[in-house]
Length: 214
View 1 (tube, one colour):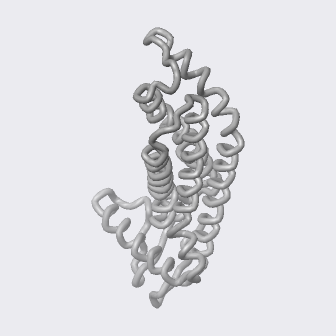
View 2 (cartoon, one colour):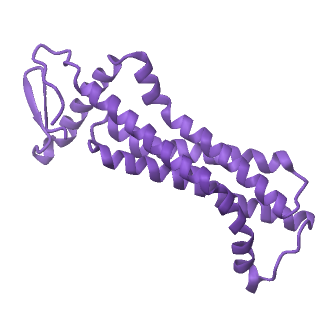
C-alpha cells in the first residue's frame, strides 16, 4: 500500500491532517503521473486504452444478444436500428465503468490491492460487458416485436413469466461469453496493476527520490 512519498525533500504522509489532505493528494497524484509518463510506451498504451478492449468485447456481446432475441421473436425489420445501440451502449458503459473503477483509482494511488483490482475487473467484465447487453436487448426487441407484430406478446399479468422463458435460452447461450468477459476483465486489471507496481519501482525525478510502495 502507498504509505508515504517524498517530494522536494518534504514528506507527504497519507494519514495527514484533514486540512492538508487535498494538497497532499494533488502532489501525490502529480508524482504518480510523472512516473507514469516515464513508463515504456507499450505499458502506457495498455494502461490508457485497456478499458476500450473490454468495451469492444461488451459491444460484441450486445450484438450477439440482440441477434438471439431477434431470432426468438422473429424480428426481421430494423436490423441496423437495433444493432447500433446494442453495440455502442455496452461499449461505452463497460469502458467508462472500468475507467472509473480501476484505471483512474490505480493511477491516482487509491487502488493498491491486487485482489481488489482483479475482483473489480471480473465484475465489470461479467456484469457490464456480459449481463448488461442481455438486459438491454430485452426492451429493444420487445418494442420491435410489438411494433411489427412478429411474435405474440402476453398480457400484462403474464409478461414477467414470458420474458423469463424467452431469456433463458439467451442466457444459456451467452454464459460462455459472460465467463470470458469476467476472465478478460480479471486479466486486464491484473496487467494494469502489474504496470502500476512497475511504475512504483521507478525513481522519482526529484533530487531526493523514494519509491512509492509498501
